[in-house]
Image 1 (cartoon, rainbow, N blue to C red):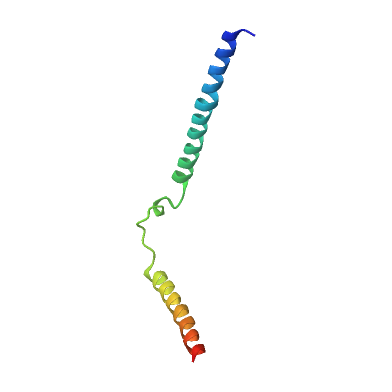
Image 2 (tube, rainbow, N blue to C red):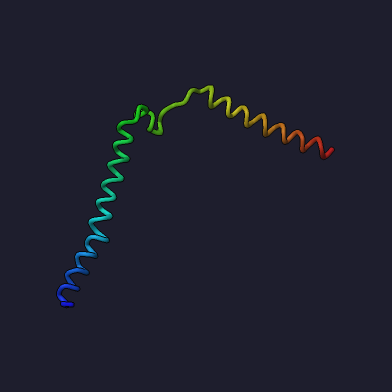
Length: 80
């Protein structure tokens, strides 16, 4: 084979394999993510600062406290 063809072919293979194909995949997947987010019905709830109802937080904290205190009482009473 002609050495110029081998050099030319290797050059374009490198550009396609490490440049254009990964860039095209990046564009495709990022655009799919963007479209999915923009079409979402809960678009406004994706931010971190959204507040939950205070009863859900209080109930979870209360449940954790009750379970923790119950196991502590069981350990203390079993030592006596």
